[in-house]
Picture 1 (cartoon, rainbow, N blue to C red):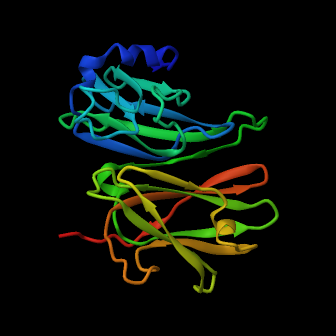
Picture 2 (spheres, helix red, strand yellow):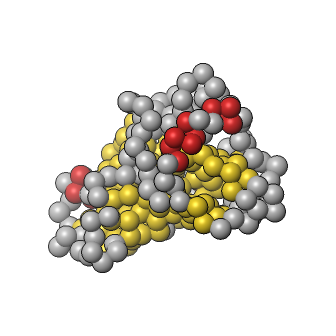
Length: 262
């Protein structure tokens, strides 16, 4: 069973009572949103025999949602083994809310099987259907303070990489993420740090060029707390990279040295 998202915004605005509930399970989609001609399509299949209530949101903390609207994009109930498709990210509900690329959360009750979630970013202006699959992770796997590495990065002849970083929404305070550009031989070319508020997402377009690097072939983007002397904060963050080539785009699968926090 496939449902479309037409008219969905008005539906979940009318469901304020359901929003007051607090789902305890979250699936995270990294880099979901709209930017220029780029949009995101999200599909969710209910893996449970019973109907499941899901919320698509950029605001996983629901504690204030009963008093004021949260930055939600959709809300629906999916029948057992049914599928819901959010065809496009809607406009923000209120000024100050954003639908730009960020970490988007699919919330569902913790006493049911987690739904299956897939997402793709697509170029609505492309005649050849240019799109890329986005990373989808369980909340516990998405955020960690450990170093991350994104290999195979190129910048030359119209090729470049976009970096999207999100600080954990449950962070106690503003924190930073260090970003470095590394050659194929493992040499650090340049590095810097970016301060983010809890839950904030930062999109760095052409991140290699942003560090003043003209070309890179097969290098890596490295995210670490240890580029910056005397700054050793261990706030969990999530990140994804999109490698843009002439005529196509691909999501780069990164690797992480996970830290076990006590």
